[in-house]
Length: 464
Image (cartoon, rainbow, N blue to C red; front, side, top):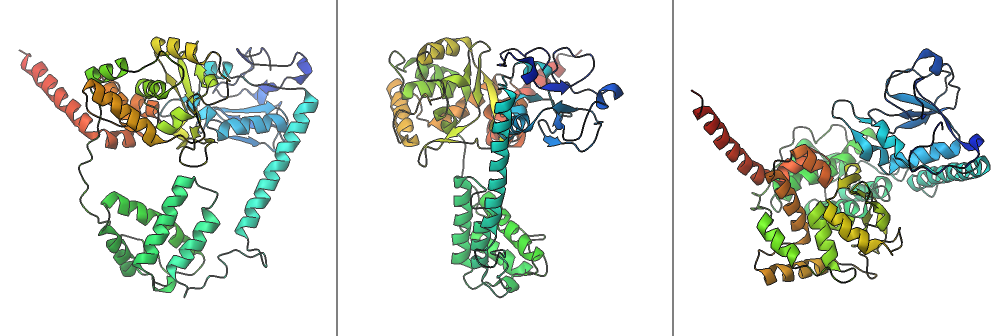
C-alpha cells in the first residue's frame, strides 16, 4: 500500500500489499477527502471496494463501474478479506471515533496513518475472506428463518387478524423484530411495555385502536409515570402500530397528534463533588497494592467513563505514548459477563488522559495480559460493590456520599465549570448528542449562564 503507515504490520512480500488508488500527489497511498482526478478514476474496475472518508465516514461497498466520481470517495484494489476488514472497522465504530468536523465529517489522514492494519499472504486473505463471506450468508439466512414461521414459510405476523388482541400482537411483534436485534437492556424495556399493555388494555383489539382509544391508553399509563417515561412508552408502541397499518390490520394511524401527559418529575438534581472534595477522595485511595476497586474509582474520576466501560478496559486500550484511552466495548456485569458493544456508536471514542494517570496505569498493567479486562477480578462484578466502597471512602474523608455514576457527573461538572465547551464534554462522555449533555447538566449550565451575565454587566459598566 505504498509506504507502510506508522505502526502497521505488513508482510514483506510487496505482492501481498493492497493497492489503494488515491490522489496522484499522495506518496503513502492513504486516502484523503479530495476530488479525484480523471486519470485516477479511469483505473477503477468493477467490484473494486468503495470507501468513504467523508460523512458518513467508513461506509463501504463494491462498485459496478469503471470509474468513481465524488468528493470524499475512494476506490480500493482489494479482495474479500480487505472488504471484510474495512467493514468490521465500520461496524465497531472505529472510523467514527477518528472522524472530526461538524458540517462535513471526515477522517484526518494522520489518523489513518496511525491505524494498524495487518495484511496476511494472499492465500490466507482469500481463505479468511471467503470464510467471513460464508458466515455473512449464514447469518442472513438465519435471520430470515427467524422471521419466517416454522410452518409454511410465512411471516409470524401473517396469521394475525384485525380482531386479535393488541397485547398479543405486540408480543409477536417483539419476537419478530426486536429479539436478537437490540441490546438485552433495551429488550427488557420492550417486555415491560408489553406487560403494561396487558395490564391497562387486556381487551383492546387491533381493529378497535383509534386515536381516542390510543390516547386513553397513554393517559392511563401517564397516571403512574412521568412525562418522559410516557413518551418512551408511546415510541415503543408506535413502531408496532405502524407495522400493523402497513399490514392492513389498522386502517388509520391512531398515533397522530397524541398528547403526552405524565406526573410532575421529581427533583433529579445530580450529585457530584466539587474540586476540593474530589481531591480529598482521590487522596484517600489505596493505590499501593495491586488491582482493586480503588483503581477503578480513580480511572472513572479522571476520565468520566461509564461503569460498564471501565470494567471492559484492557491494557491494550491504553496508548501511553499518545496519552489516550480507547473506549470500544462494555462489560456485561448485569448478565453473565463478557464483552458487549458500547451503549451507542458515539460511545466509541478516544479519551485524552493526563501524564500522572499515564504513569500510574503504565506501571500497573505492564505485566498483565493485553486483551484481558483489568478490573474484572472474579466471575460476577456488581455495581453495588463499587458503590459501597466509594461510599466508605466518602464517609472517611467527610464529603458527600456519591455513586460511581456520580463520579462521571463530577468529571463532567468540573470540565464545564472550567470552561470546556458542551460539545467537547459530550464527546468525552460518549453522549449521542449535545442535547443529552445539556439536559443532564442543565442546572450547571444555568449557574454558568448566571456567571456570564455578571461578566457581561461588569464589561458593559466599564465602558465610558
